[in-house]
Length: 120
Image 1: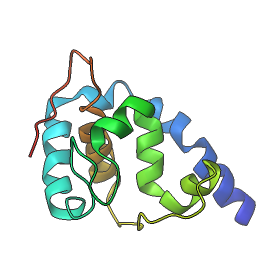
Image 2 (image 1 turned 30 degrees about the horizontal axis):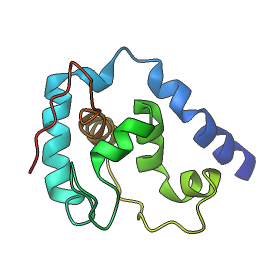
Image 3 (image 1 turned 45 degrees about the vertical axis):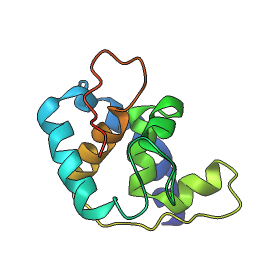
């Protein structure tokens, strides 16, 4: 059972990327901003480091699928990246909310012509 869970977490980015450009959908990005305001704002800021890294920093270093996977299972992703600890809690979100937040975070990627992120 543990192997199945681990395998599903490792394959998740591939499965998420299988859907067409979900991270560029303006409606999804707008929903992601709403979810961010309700559940992520306490630790993150779109453009400057707060308790957690800024979305600009994250988006410049991660793919949309990696962002999605980190939101789904932050403890596992932190461990895989070799971080000494994980301070991001698991926040229960629906799949659609998770996709939306990941799209919103990725919208802060510098130089992205579809960049729709707005500073708070």
